[in-house]
Amino acid sequence: MDIRSRNNVNVIGRDDAPVLLLAHGFGCDQNMWRLVVPALAERYRVVLFDYVGSGGSDLGAWSEERYSSLQGYAADVVDVCEELDLRQAVFVGHSVSAMVGVLAAQAAPERIGALVMVTPSPCYLDDEGYRGGFSTEDIDELLASLEANYLGWSSVMAPVIMGNPERPELGEELTNSFCATDPDIARVFARTTFLTDSREDLKNVSVPTLVLECEQDAIAPREVGAYVHAAIPASRLVTLDATGHCPQLSAPQATTEAILGFLESLK
Image (cartoon, rainbow, N blue to C red; front, top):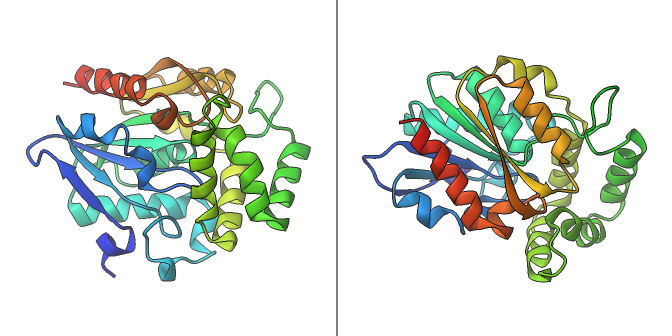
């Protein structure tokens, strides 16, 4: 199978520079990076792709069996890395993709040399001594609502996830992105996202890691950022002066500066 077509792979920027591999989150696609890509591409080789089932990917390659676990998405990442023969790339993962990056780096350590986690969460469920932001009842209700009326769920939840109610165009963009996703595929991805507990995987991260959080985030509260930072010894925590779960759209300049600052520290 042609991986470049399957995952709608696009490569821009400098051919002679280190590689950044940008991975989108649930209900999104590579277009969500468009406001940070120009500045990154001036200095780096930027690889963009869509997970199978998202954006411009080959929907015919999707299977519920593969994508019912984060390992399936990590396999997409490894496939793209192998297709392009990437070595020691910096994986930039938004939301659930931050944990996908952890799994991909484990599976192919020669391919990924550093991680940037943008508003990550290893576990959305509250637990004893851990605040993920959602109770079991919250998650059950969220998933039941999504499965009953995906378009209605999207129009309600996307603005909450995005935050920044004074900028409704941001919430509308995320709503449109969610609504462009096949409901059956979204249902599987949502369950995979919100029911997975990746906390144990964090202890295996040994590469330099940037954890990017926002001052206010309804999906990944700051306790989560602190937890991820504490769990990964080789990590740096940066709190953006931003709100919402998608700072690459709501605060692109601050997000770009934080990523570039981290990349400079790797040299």
